[in-house]
Length: 294
Length: 268
Image (cartoon, rainbow over all chains, first blue to last red):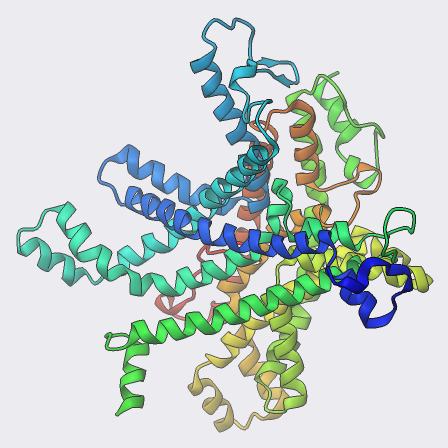
């Protein structure tokens, strides 16, 4: 990176460190922090969408739909989350290939599951064997996003379901007295008012989502955990210009500090939002704000 | 091979008793049930030790955080923030590599790099922090009347704490603490993913579930088995903690008793 880095053997102290920390691999390491942030930015809205769908389904008047929504919420919560992450990545992959297999190769007669193998025709493979490397990486990342969205969607569904039920009953009764249909009541009365009740749960969920991002590593994405293990391991002089011992401890210490900082900043920002939203509301928080002002 | 024979061979495989070699071909449903169940021994071990030891430290942390002395309050605050503010996954990794580098200079740290001790310590500290925060919240919501009544009866100091404040604190905290316990058991599945090696393929339930999913390339059997085991474990924890909750609330009229509701904090 810097000009004096041409010959690392002659360097020492801080200048060595400045060269070491700006090698190509380290730049990839810093970029992987971006991967984590991108994952958060994409997943959070999708998970919220899943959650909204799940909560709306759990409130449905049709028995099968309500049942589906409730099962979605409760199964995901009863089982260790890592099991879900491991399960969905393979299950989604195989499900997609299975569907494509039936659509693209209808004249294929061999069974798909042969003993311990899962065989589909080569046109149904995802991603295609011929596709470039970045497609493979994007596919892996998309699977990770969908998996996160499914799991966190269930948590969000639970929060939103609770929030929809906390909208005061009088509001709903008034709406029906005015002759609104169930659908109108839902969209015009419940949905606009539920956010205040949902915010504490959702902000808790955001913190949880931040802390779940290291699990990207389990899904095979080259994230910060991957790079910390990769870069921290013992490096011999034969393979690198910057030999060092086992420094994984220090890399993971850096990750620990990163996460602590991130959760702290989120906490401060979310508290600020909660104050803004509570202004003028008939809740304990809003009442406290009013008292403090007068 | 009959199922009884399989249970005999693999029932205690996760703690090194029975057949050394894991099955490699022709996996039966019985083998999957037995091995994943065998792995559950580790999850229960980690959970029970961490919870028991963590309960004591959590009480101290809650008292420290509520203390007016900054020398007690600040360390408790920081401890709780450190363990609640960072992912458990990263804590496992950091602790493992920390123990590794300590081992290379000090012989004493040899067993710390094994999961049975190293991971238990991390889980213990982690659950202490979460439970400490729960107890702190409960301590602050102990009714003022209880304390005033205790004063009126001439209680003071440690005796007042032991007989009046502490039982109330535990009673108020218990429903939330139940969820913390359930969640801790779920968190034990992270151990063998985070650096801590499974010695001689002696792993926990998830370790074996992944083993089968990898070998058969079929996630639809081992993971539901794992899920079923964990749902049973969750029900067992709720049952046991419910009994304690009943005893804690036995002096109260029915309507005012605190109820346990299943509300885990999801991921740590």
